[in-house]
Amino acid sequence: MIKILLLTDFSSGYSRSLLKGVVKYAKEYGPWIFYRMPLYYRELHGDKGVVEWAEKWGADAIIAQLTDIDVNILDQLNIPVIVQNYKTRSKSVSNLTGDYYSTGVMAARFFFHKGYKSFAYYGFMDTVWMRERGEGFKDTVRNMGYDVCFFDERENTAGEKWNFNPEAVSEWLLALPKPIALFACDDFYALQITEACKICNINIPK
Image 1 (cartoon, one colour):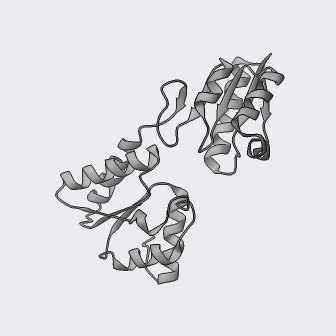
Image 2: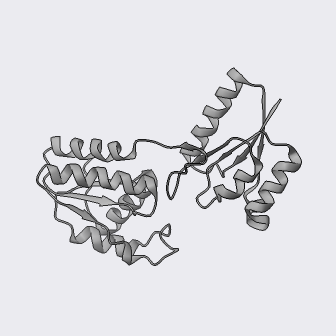
């Protein structure tokens, strides 16, 4: 029976959907055994500790969805490793990835056909999915003859980009021309925008 080590927290809807897909696949092509490693174990022992535990358990493969995982260390196991790309795509393992650039293109075209002439993007550029979504959005908007307002990453210091800074975001939103079509890089960041808009009494149609 194949043993699969899962390295993720499953705290988001995407993560839980990913797990459902893996379980569905396992039912068709298994049987597989899963082990969800507690996040605290990696915090205590690091990636080397994960490798040692995987060797002891006899893991046949790893599915990982962590932001800072060291793929080179996991490669030491010489077993299949599937990783959701974060900073960039890895050439040494299978990547859970998507056509992020086209997502940005699709968003830009949607807003353009709605008649908008002002555009903004909320997200950072240090992760592959945020960066490529922003690039697709920016390139498409500019090809249509308009520009895109980006949130200034310098408002947040290094290491704090996942911390919501409502003051900085609110100041940015208030300075944007209205009406404006704003594309947030994902649901988590879109929620930050809606909360900031409530604080600033900025109307979000429908």
